[in-house]
Amino acid sequence: MSLRIRLHEGVTARSLALARVVVFAIWIVFVVQDPLHDLVFLPFELFHTYGVFEFVPDSFWQAILTPAGLLGLKAVAILVFGWALLGFRGARWMTAFAVVVGMVYLQVRKGFGGHWDHRELTLVYVTAALVLTPAWDAFAVHRTNGVRRDGIYRASLLVLSFVVIVQYVFIGAARTFIGAPGVFLDGTLQNWVENRNLRPNPFGFDIGTYFLDPFWAVPLDLLFLGGTILELASIVLLFLRPGWIKVGFVIGFAVFHMAIFLMMNVAFPENIALLVLFFDLDAPLRRMRAGRSGAGAATFDPGNPRAALLARRAPAQSPEVSFRAVPSVPGGIEFTDPDGRSVSGRAAVTELMYRRRGWLGIAWLRTILPGFDGPLRAERGAVASWFLGPVPADAAEEPTASEHDRV
Amino acid sequence: MPSRVLQSPFVESTAVTPELVIRAVLELLFLLAVIIVLLTLSDFRRRLFALGAAALTVFYIFIGGWSVVQMVDRWQYDYPQDVSFIPLTRFAMYQAQLESSVEASYAWQATLADGSERDVNIAKEFESVGLPPMSTRMRVLLGWAHDPEDDQQHADAARELELYAEGLYGALSADGLEVEELSFSRVTGTPDDVDAEVLFTWSAEELSAR
Image 1: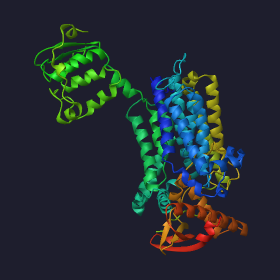
Image 2 (image 1 turned 135 degrees about the horizontal axis):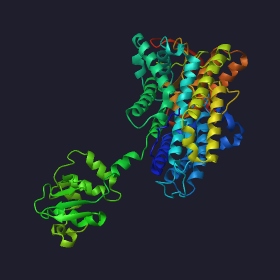
Image 3 (image 1 turned 180 degrees about the vertical axis):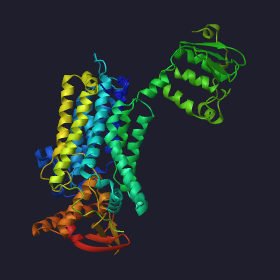
């Protein structure tokens, strides 16, 4: 018997690259919004190092724990994470350096506390795993290239996702085997909620206090048990195809994180963001492109200046589309794809935009706007005219026959 | 309302008892079972071959090291820590049964130049440290200050809390507040019936002398 891994079937270099963008975007947001400079007020005597950082001389930390040092650390971190995100030359090495910078950054923060919690370590581990992958083969300023083994992008994304899964399995197993059954009984979560609401916290949510009535003890115990089962079952994500079961898992994790945040003031925003690693981030782009790049035929009303303008300018960017002038076309312009499906008005304009390089996103946005399929007006609206002026007069000129017949 | 923290030995037990050993062995067996199923009964291993031998070796060593630390590290919530495996650590949270919510709590208060008093939220003033690490440190220092095992522990608490008071004084002054006095209290009772016991007080002169 062999269980088949289903996660990340059919992913591409772009899927992996987008995962890389997500990881470093999380880092950049994490660093930018962090009030690290406040640590300058705390005396150095309070600072403790942990693990491997105990081997780093105190003079290094003393240099960092100055106004210039903290500012410099933050600047270096943003530079390094930004470099790896954008994929400049040497981004893979820069990612290895980013792991070191990220760990130093966390040591500086947690050195003034009483222990090193695991909150950001999943992000660190995922970043470290990126070093093992060709995550700069797409969406990078300097794209790496070369012959790749079949399935390497899937293997890469499986590794990243597996790190996230392992953290959930570890946490769920620790709670189950060290705390069960008592940890799920007698209002334990309610006691944790009360405790976490009463100690000083930086967020000030008091939603948890609404659940301190004895009535909520059992529902909260069940929520705790359900969340733990979800953590233990997270390994199942490896065997799930895209679909509602996987979405349900991810929503469950997000709800669990948000419940802890809102009820207990303990935040795991990085881990919530990392949940997108379970999805093929290139899939929406592929879906938008699918069937949108083929040939087509457009008929337009030469009496409609805007339609005529499109017919003059669009062929240069969409050479596979033919244009033909037909008086009184419904909606001003009509587009028919090779399968015979036909749309008119603004929907037809959007179909043409889909065929333009770089306009895919805007075309997609247009499809979700209200009135997307409305008729093409002959003139710009008042606001658009105020900023952009009227439709150019030459647009009203009827295209030449050769332009009509361009294919 | 003064803020309160847990002051209880059963928050994250680190005492190595026979029961803990048995539970840890069961935890180990479960994780081993998951790993064995994944590596032998699924095509997970084959799916990763494309990464290449070098990258896969590094990955397996990392997962192996992380797993060992997950099994071994029982001291990640201790302060001060005798042993730390950072950059690896045990991933665990809310793993202990809490029989009651709160036994004691702490509060920082400032007396300003105009005579008014205000609560000082150290978790907010030094948000960058992170809530769990800061709470652990305050919880331990509160215990040392109020129920010390010996005079040295009480002296350590007094020294560290004074250093935090200096930090708070600097942060509040930078915010434009004229602080005359800072105090650290132990709080007991219930939210509706608070009993605060001031353990330490520092004047502005003491805090600005350094």
